[in-house]
Image (cartoon, rainbow, N blue to C red; front, side, top):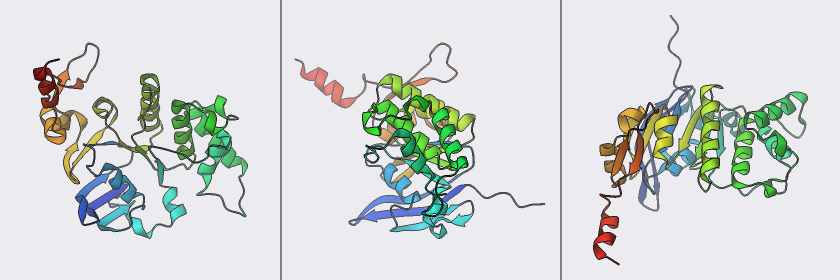
Length: 277
């Protein structure tokens, strides 16, 4: 009998300390292929530090991390880039590139000075543009794009890497409701129909509840929640995580409840009301 396949990503007792301050404290979890992991938690909980440590951008950490059963530190940058693609919260590069050229740069793990783009690379770019609905933007400059268009192009460039894992830091931040929903739907399709594993930091509890297959909650650098969304995203557990009250609302036609901050119980709002005009 063949041994079971290792988790796609595994962290054990990962800690990060900056300026004598603990940012992450003994974080441990595993991630299997095809999962959609939403990372939630208050500001300063260590969410971005966690994904940057996974990406190798915080080399000074303790604990162990493995990718597909191999120590993450043993991967060369190009090799790692074939597994992990990152869409940061703010992107300021590539402003004066055509969209298609920018997405083609996502093929960097496969290209070199003596290995220019081949027809198969162009085909991957075409597919990434199609999957993100950005074909019509191909000849536009990145600088000319709206926030929603830019985010889709960023995701297209990440998909051009053909990664095992797509990692996003608050992908819908700064977007209007229409574009938030479009990005939400795009990530669902990438995960559900194309099998790409996703790690996404989000402050949208409803996106975590309805889109993710698993939720990791961080507070003060420690894992406080880890499990299926419907099991861990309850008003009681969210209050403990965020120090803020939540309501769970039943909406007709929805299989899952919807979560909203409970303004009736929030201390700051009650104090403001009590103070009067």
